[in-house]
Length: 188
Image 1 (cartoon, one colour):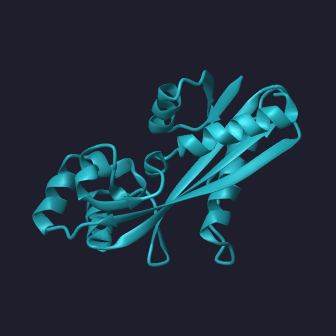
Image 2 (cartoon, one colour):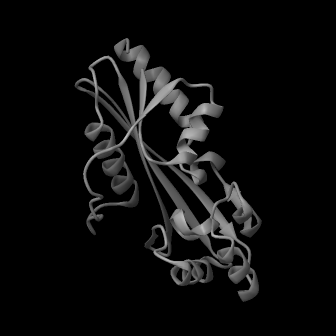
């Protein structure tokens, strides 16, 4: 059985849409701030593995952990604490390219597989009234980088290079490949 170690409704939706059967488990522990010595891919891979390991069940289950960050000009943009911070993030992203990294970890018994997906997103230049109206919808308040590409925030995007579902929080094509290879290698 596939176990999703995540509280993210977006990850659940993406897994359902991919046709996978799964159960949800709440990952344990607190988020660990990234080390300055680690690369962004290393940060998300470490967090994804930590989530998967914290929710591990029976040895024959495959536990999926995922962690997504938005990075612009070397800064990690997490979920905004409030509307004012969401506006600041969107102003910062306006007219710029940023990267979205998602770490994926699969855990089954003593077996581990961890990978990272990267997508580049460029925002068009945003007017202040657009930012205000978007933040007033409430959509950006629980999203890394303060936007949801699959919602109204998709209108902020000028270009995307890479995996669209990665920007939502789960790179489905990579995950499906990883699961097939993981199961083939270990019979899980």
